[in-house]
Length: 407
View (cartoon, rainbow, N blue to C red):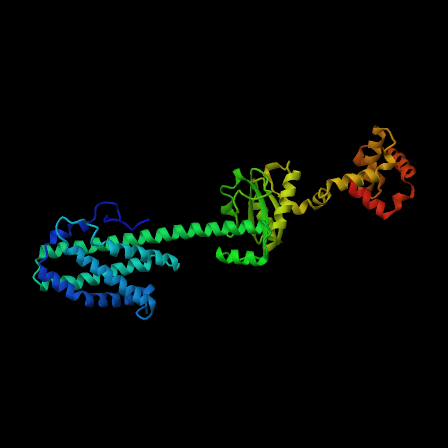
């Protein structure tokens, strides 16, 4: 974007186009130009004395920047005031506007607001007007011309201010877009499991301070709007192009959401149909992402009312059992082999009873209540199981395998 044209900050044609109406005598202009170095020095001194952001800046790089900017601005003003009638209004001040635009961008790059620079413009307008008007009156300017001269001074300063505001906004917008891209790439590298040195360099480029931990959260895309405002502002979002991400989901990487902070995260996610992975060391959040994806694909907690988030920490057993479905099927077939010769209805009832016996630690009344049968029925079925399995029902390894297979 280019700096502002010769228009006021309200968008209307500025007073810059009226400079030719001054009709300054060449002798007066010569006087004003002779005053330029002194006016520039006094303006710099006033700015560094009155504007806190530039206090003590006469020495060093900032002092040189201020002095160069003042010289350029004052020279552009005198060029404007002396231009021939009918010349374009922006041509004489183009370099000064470009300089003001660059100043605005520089303030944004240094992380400063425009308060100091705009205050410097106001001080510069006052000081330059005081000295130039005195020199003009001494050179024979009448009161009407002096009044028009004042209008031109402050219209010119208005344009310099507008150009700096434009430069500041453009720099912030550009740097914001660049940082957003760096943050997105960092998130993608984290989910991809990049090496620690690569992640460290990516975090530095993105100006992102790594937290202790990150938690991967899967959220339906339709629910993301408004959710980020409730989460830690350091939360990362890698975008849609994430390998393995379930269709329709967006992944967010939330900082320091482990321990006591997990309850707060779950509260913030209420109603979002989210899946929350474990809190992992920040550079290992790919493991949190993988677990959240497995939980989503398994449909764990998918019937929860009100969109309550699924916390994978509450479904660890189910996730473990689903880690190798073929191995689980083989284990189930092997440990239930003694029931394979029975009629299906009988096998189903004994399997149900065996599962309840394992989970209720053999307490007959609890088993009967769970299966809605008489305790004597439970006793009869357990007798059948003893005949089929024999001493293996007292073997810890067999008990472990049966529990896993029937969980």
